[in-house]
Image (cartoon, rainbow, N blue to C red; front, side, top):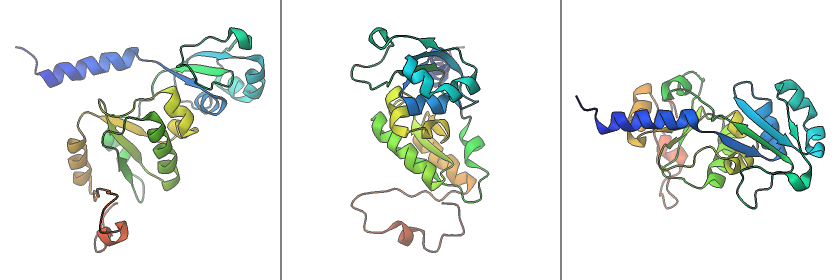
Length: 207
């Protein structure tokens, strides 16, 4: 019996995720990843200066660094990436299923992103979501920014702490959240209502 296309796509996505690695760069992004016990770390390349600045994090992570001279610093980064003498190859974080992350907090909040593909925008949103106490930031697998070094650098460490989940279908995720009891609001720059007005009378529900 031939497998449905969506099953084949799901299996292919899972295989790709298993092979995928991410190169994080910059002192802050590398430090936070080194300090994250849930992050699988593969290879650390640093200059002597960066090694000294990251000494405590390197010691805590038990990762053996490759120390290189600045002029011989070579890593698979996009041109113009400001690495500050530190790059770390890692596996993407696995936060689990939507229901694993979005149930539990006393006042859960979830940020849903519809086709936000710029990693700098997603990184900034992760920073804001962490401050707001969001349970998760949710995007789609094929039309939202994946974990990249640029995203991690813009997130300033939030990527290591703020769950960022990418789902197959955003509409299905919305329905799933509503079944959990979430009130789902769509934000529009031209909206005639404020968020406070939209939730008036519905504050007994999770927002």
